[in-house]
Structure formats: structure tokens, C-alpha cells
Length: 383
Figure (cartoon, rainbow, N blue to C red):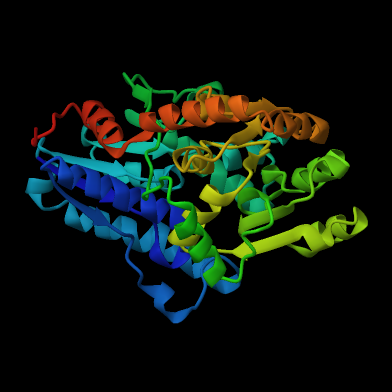
């Protein structure tokens, strides 16, 4: 049996999707299967430095939507690729157009979220407004996506939302199911001395307690709540707010300044994996007050490192955290502050961390690979 994974266009540098494709590839190989990744060919994109803005964006579109489909068509002229023992899997729903060029019964796709699709249709709870062309693009993505015969959705919420958007006007028996993401790297508890040394190397003061957030500065991530949460804590807690990932923007810094908290904000821009694991291990709590997610990888990463997690009480955060997090209203800084204060009780904190470790076991790579093979109608080669 041969599995061909369709990855994302490399110049777009969509790191999470690149890691997802590589994770699936590694998992299948560990199961004894022959597998490879087909990355969309970079042809015209070689002449530009970036493909997410300006002219480079349109050049990237040409490579992705014109050149690569032609390459797919050409490759499929090789009859062996149309044999029943070859399975194609599109790793990102935003590439649903490729379903048009691949054999229906031998092709599946992963839907990571429908945030951009729903945003383009006017759903404000997606926190993903679209431009004029974005609306056209997302309509196009949805058109092909709902025609997939086999689909893996990373959360029940994402599957439910996709189904609510309508079904394809064709007679097709569909196999759509929830397959949660697995860890795309190694996250685990490390000794205090080790994480202190790792953080000291990047100039981080490990003597000061801190709340941690991991992710981008998109509005749906609700980063500003951490500031309001700390303000609500007042004299009951005197630590810092650490934001790992995308650099904080001017609006966030102005909010911190207005609240008198600018000196307590630390931005760790795109930390490497070891630094990220150290941050999860060292934090007083991991706070994830997102308004809208498809899955929420940082929740399980924090749990696997032994960090107590406080996250939003709206799906898919409860689904993903699996009873191993304190849930709070993402519109209420006081709710998050009270949840954090509850962690001052050592018994409560210990129970939550233990539940987090138990929940993290649900997201092991071997389990995800087995679920994908079931979707394909295949079995592991390696016992």
C-alpha cells in the first residue's frame, strides 16, 4: 500500500500545516507503510521573496491553482497511481481544489477549521472577516470541500460547523469523521534546573512567576484578556504576562500601558521548540482565552508539560481539554482571574495537572495514524 500526501505550497511558510504533513508522513512510515509528500511545485514563486502579500500572493496562486493541478494531472497519467492500493490525502482543507484532479474513491482530506469559510459568509463568531476576493476564494474552497467522499475533521465542532454549511448537491455516500490532531513534536515535563537553564539562555528571568499564552495576535486569540485578567487580580498576584509566538502589536502595548502593566509584559517571538517546552514547564498557568478555534494545539501541549490550563468555555476548547482544564467565559476577565486564584489551592492544582496528563494521552501519534488508516480502509502493516 502506498500513501501520497498532498502538502502545502512551501513559500507560504504555513508552519503548522507543514508540521502536520510531516507528522502524518512519519507516522505512516512507522506503521510500515510506503508514503511520500507531494509539495505543490514552486515554479513562478521562485522569483519573489514572499507569497502572502502583493504581487507575490498572485504569483503563488498561479503556482498553486494552475501549475500544480497540471502537474497532478500529468502524474496521474501513470496508471500505477490509479491502482486501488494507492491512497491520496490532502493535508489541508484550503487545498480542496486538488480533489477535482484526484480519484474520488482514493482521496481524502483533513479539515482543520472552517473559520475563514464561515467568516467569509458573515458569521461574526468566527472572528475571521474576509476581503472581497477572500469571499470568492473561501466559497471556492467550500464548494470542493463538501464534495470530498472521505474527510477527517480535527474536532467535533469543526465537523458540525461544516455540516451546517450544507451538503454537496450530488448523490454520494460520505465518510466524514472526527480524527483529533496528535502532537507534532515532543512535549513533556522537564526538570526545574533544565527549564531554568534554557530560559536563562534567552535572557528570561525565571525568578518571576508568569502567565503564558502561545499563539498569534489575531483578534480571535483574545490576547488582551490576559491583561484584563491580571488587572482584575490586583494585589493578589504580582507576576508577568508572557506571550510566545507572534510579536505583540502596538495596540496590545497601548492597552498594557493604559492599564499600567507595560512593565509586566514579555514577548518571546517565535521561540524554538526547547524554549517553548521550557515556558510551558515554568509558567504558573497556561491561559488560552480564544473566541474561535478549529482545534487548539497549545492546550494539549501545555497539559503534556504539566502546566495547569485555563481556557475558554466555548467549543472546541472543552472538547480538546477533555476535563483537564479550568473553563471560563472568554468575555469575562474576572472569570479567568477567579479560575487562576482557584489554582492557589495545591490540591486543586495537582488534580488539574493530573487530569491534563491523562487527557494528553488521547493525542498520541499512533492513535491518530490508526484512525486515518481506518478512514482509508487500511490496516497497519507493522504490529
